[in-house]
Image 1: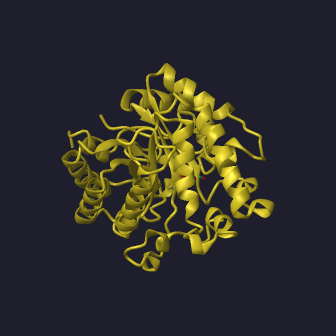
Image 2: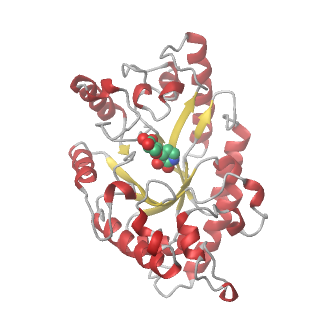
Length: 348
Ligand code: XIL
């Protein structure tokens, strides 16, 4: 069946409606989740700022609670995320660590610690999240590194002290991150995850191809049949009626390019939001419009079912979504299924 995302408790969602703290809502969420889903992604509790506030200090309490709940309910865990320009503590790559040698040492010890802690408990990792710039015009068409976010603290730190004559650049944090993750948890499937993927797919595909080619001759590679970057998470944060809208051609072109690169695909953070609807009332026409867009996507997902590992929604019900004002999910504010739900399960 289709899968979902986020923790069953919701208390870590900063923007959540205060009603979420209500015990009855939490138990409704949990019942709904157990009935509908078979894999979960933690929305916030595995992000670096929540796991490690200071150098060599790790707190796994909240994430371990999620793992225990998932195990008890036979729900797999996809882990999110190790390396990101947001929600990350300063000690990793800022201040005294804003140089290539320190950032590399910190990146490797962070990943060894965290991916090591969850080894055997998670099926897959978003190793690097959102490394590419939204300004796709910087991408020169053939060198993926030209498309990266140059203002990521990871890029800045790795650039400081890079020897350009040896081909080094700020981009090198990405390869180091995947190698560290593979060494820490060899059984986890390693993903790259990004949004606006229907604009950025060529850079993303070239990055994966290039890192996988490099890994093929890396002396640390003990399984030459296996890629280093194995899959792409297509976040799939869409809008109703504005960019990125659900464009079937663009979505299919994107999937096909990743398949061509030999990569697995996950739809990793799906939601389709109305722009500032913000009134907690979806009339029938709007429900139908949103349901049709979900339907378009799921027709494509079914066509590529052999290549798609999971479809994850970014949140459980509209009221606790990070885009709650746009009512983007399959379940409404009372955890009742919307028209989109019936379309997705094929009964719309
Ligand atoms: C969001 C969460 O949903 C929010 O609760 C948090 O305040 C910010 O992050 N891309 C990602 C996710 O990869 O981690 C983001 O999640 C949404 C965009």
